[in-house]
Amino acid sequence: MEKDALIYIRTLGHQGDGIGAPVAGDTTGEALYVPFTLPGETVRAPGKGARRMAAEIVSASVDRIEPFCDHFIRCGGCQLQHMAEPAYLQWKTGLLAAALEREGIEKPLEPIRHYPRGSRRRAVLTAQKSRGQWQFGYSGRRSHDVVDIAACPILCGELQDSLPAVRLFLDLLGRHGIGRRGTVRIVLLAAENGIDCAVSFTGSAADRLIREIPAHTAAKAFLRIALNDEIVFERQRPVLKAGTALVAPPPGSFVQAVAATENDMASLAVDHLADCRKVADLFCGSGAFALRLAQNSVVHAAESEQAALDALDRAWRETGGRLKALTHERRDLFKRPFMAAELKSFDGVAFDPPRAGAEAQCRELAKSTVKKIAAISCNPQTLARDLHILIDGGYRLKSVTPVDQFAFTPHLEAVALLER
Ligand SMILES: C[S@@+](CC[C@H](N)C(=O)[O-])C[C@H]1O[C@@H](n2cnc3c(N)ncnc32)[C@H](O)[C@@H]1O
Image (cartoon, rainbow, N blue to C red; front, side, top):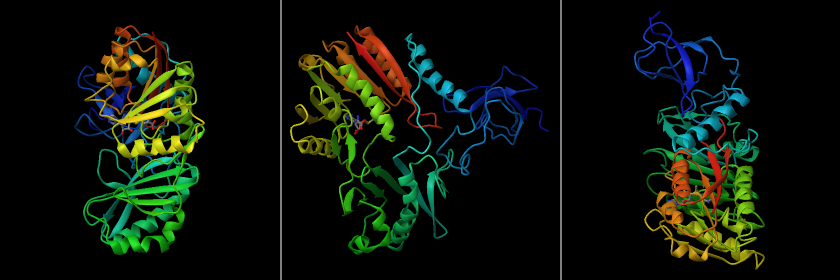
């Protein structure tokens, strides 16, 4: 056996890989990264580089459990099915705690919110032709090759049930030359009333294909089908509940992946901002938060995607006056954040940016007179940076709640509530 093949795993990195050092040898040397291992384990991982795969778990952690999915390890979708829930949730909470600590923010975290397996209502899948056959599933770990999956237990039942129809639909697309160049991306959404399917690929869809879709068996499984953002089939608009409103998000657009997560994050924000007269919802998407905030407050929503704003506007108009006034604006909030002077008429702000965070916006908020802020985030690092800016600007951090929307992965959402 190679001298340095036995590795003791000290900790889990922020990507979920075990990090360790050779049992015999120089333990002060470079760290070795061994995915699918756990702290306290000794594993045999022969090889030369800093990244290795474990060939054998020589002594297993008490937190090691049997993964529930047959595709685990080969499929790049999940990284942490082999870890018992208490240890997993502790590690995940620790990701946020460490990010806050690095920014010098001392705030005990609220208990992590977590959700049952099989609650994912939105999935982004990939299909790729290999020797004339579709491979349909998720990209492999650190690879662009698609791992074909028979099932995905992470998904809600409705999405799992729709997978055979997606394969059937891929066969139709393949007959029309789609997938000859590059991969095909499929975004599935289990809406309140059925499944939305948005497919994107290199090239364009022939008219002949578009005419065939409505009569094709696969179409029966879907409410709406879009090819490269163009709706080519629609039995009904797929709708999601946003409080008392029903919103039909544009095909393939951003939607919180788990409905219960969206409810929880929105409730935290809505309760915090409930006594605000006028609230700005920034990076509002199709209005998951704005439409709920408008139950209590006048809302101005801003976002860079026009199609998302159109969906929000229609949802608000269809409530027939049940909600307070909700205006919207297309705006690049990285380049043109709301300036402190513009924020004068608002007493509350919610923001939910992409992974890059909302640095420019927070610099203006820090100078503003806004009383209450709800910061929703999908990246602990940028959240911590943004909170630091707000705290320096005079805000008090009331609470930070980790939200495990993407279970069994290293991704973590959080909701932070602040006030002046
Ligand atoms: C994490 S999503 C949140 C959407 C919405 N709050 C929700 O929960 O459904 C972030 C949103 O920011 C928008 N976005 C991305 N870059 C932006 C920018 N530079 N300016 C404004 N909006 C942006 C995206 O289109 C997306 O809708």
